[in-house]
Length: 321
Image (tube, rainbow, N blue to C red; front, side):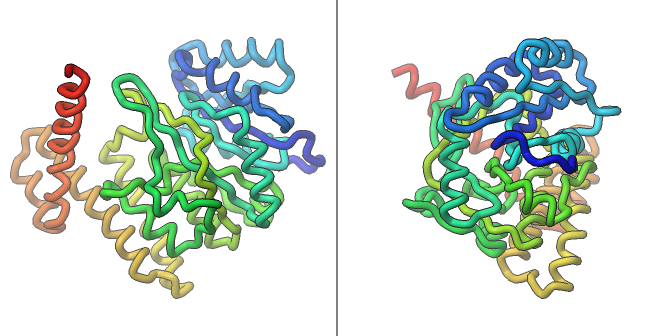
């Protein structure tokens, strides 16, 4: 971290990999924040398009934008770690390169954080994208009127992988820089899926106070190229290894209760399911059966693609009426 005093309110970390179709809109939404001073750190991660040159052109015409390139392709967590080391703001904020934020979001979150004494502050998401109807992410019981505190127990209970309820790990909290520095927590650079979730868990365990507002201010774009929609076996197994390290730490601390065990079980099922799917793709049916025998509940996840197809068919039929 830089030792100089913060020179702006919010530092936006925009991890960028082949994001050129969406990059302008993301940067513009960060620069359009009302009532706060901002900087936008576009960290280009050795993609194949012209995103770096495009970010450098932004930097040349607006000093609030800084273009940075990673030493080598390292994934979003590694890119955000670089942004953390370079940030000049009082608050660290993640903005995915294909997403948007509403103009009032930063001011509203900072004001709420200061009022409640929060170190982490998040809000509901608005999901949008081609072929989907725009909608809010959180269920009413989580998007409590007036806001609510998120402690580790509630966070574990609300981060069930491939569960039936929205996962709090998808939210995009802003983090107070002084608390982030004091915690010493950084992204796990090995994780390319679930890296935000892993960071938040570690920050909660470090004692940072997390507050959630019900108003949606982060616009989360869903499309076919979204990293969060691609769960490869390699990435799934990295998640599981990271989660097992977390489990070991929680056991030592006496915090591995029922909510956490359910979370861990959901990740273990998802990895078993992914192993089975990969074996089927390789036309190895016996190998596909082995992980399901070891974790029988993983077989239930085969219903997920069928449910998704059914929902798409219903949406298409409704649109045709």
